[in-house]
Image (cartoon, rainbow, N blue to C red; front, side):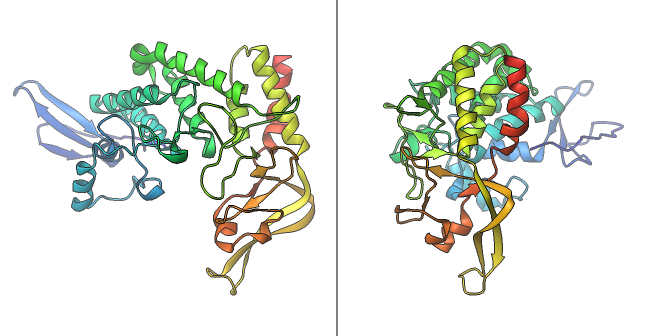
Length: 358
């Protein structure tokens, strides 16, 4: 997310409220008639402050990412305020991490101390959420069911590691947090990398990639939702490899992990297929998703069997099927079972990284 450029044309800051052209507001807090103090507010950041839980994280109400561009009704504001202590903070779909990043950018542009404090509380929450293995669960402090698993799904843990890296290095407007949390953030990054290396899956003696979630104690691939079985991921593994490839002066262990992960992804490429969305009046929502032959295309599956590397597809009945067509239309059209996620990594980014790190 990015903040619109703030343009301010103000002759005097004596009125209690001035609306800016960016959608931000300048609110005067006068300590004396001769020394007025203006506090710049960003409307999206203000909503983030309202919704932030008292312990620092952010929720994902109803399992959906919060739309901060939508105006909040008074009843919604009241509801969010009443839920300040609810233990539902998550890192799913960039929850908590996107708020921290936005607030740091908002602070850089507005100098509003409330945004820095909220972001700091968010980073402290993430530091506390890191488990003994160095990974992050999908939810914290809620540890019920699969919420406690080390979660790479939808790049959740990698999103956290980028926030920790920015905090440790002061990049991306995180300089103010580097002063207070930089050392702790770097330790969290180091532990997170160790967790990544330990969870990379071996098939016998062959190092492969990662599952979308791993057990926090055994570090083995684990099940999440009914249609997310233990497997090797053709999607989430890409984000993990990109993070490892961004490490300056990588260790031999990191290099080994990258080489092995890219080699596996290249080997499981499914050539000659293309994914296509079509209209189908016989389906509940009038649409379907099909796989068609195309000699110029290639796909990767979201889920590969842990032993055979064969792609499989799972609906809400948790029964793996050999083809996408065998699972229900609702899942077939509502979840990314196929994609081209590793293509650029394999063809462009990895060769450049390999030259740099050989």
